[in-house]
Image (cartoon, rainbow, N blue to C red; front, side):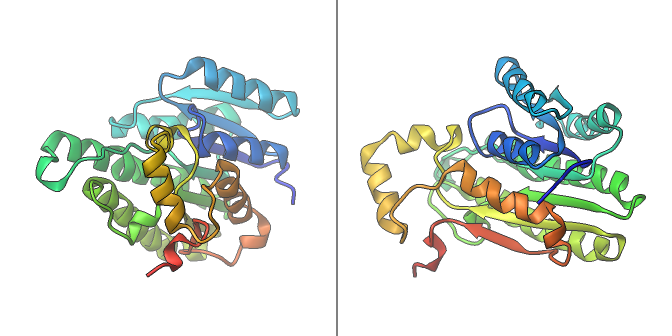
Length: 252
């Protein structure tokens, strides 16, 4: 597939994770890419250089998504830098592992703001740019926790469940405009996001025991799903969730 001439924004692409893999996949397919990060200037600059080496335009944009206005500003900056945004893949997220009785208001609000409120702001702002051209792809990277509860992840699960319903409503409202809105629900993926937990041999073994494929997922597994959803082949797919979890959700 070719994304030649398409302009993309990927949020949360500064760390070694899903966002970075998505940027590489989109650029390899021919897209120009705006790379959002939070204080990871060197990593973002390196990724921009990779994209430029492929002959694509690229720009790094820094913003803290605990400020929803800053999230909207990233979309506007991407539009200004690239001349518009045809594709948005939202991977930016935070996670606090805390038991329910120990989750304080500040932690709860931070997770909901970054994951859900800023995610909506990015998707909404991008959709406003896309609708006028009659074509757009919005992909929100959620989690299997949008359906499945896990101890210590009340705030995270709530943010992802909210993201799912928000995306489905956006998909319904925008369906006639040529803009699609879909989700990807990863399971356990080997990224900076999970690296500390996966570094615990007991925790890692417990996760592997739950995954029918018997391996931890790679960021590239998620990027492949994103690449499908932003292409012409997914033009009749909207409001859907693609689960990328090695069969984790198949377990009772």
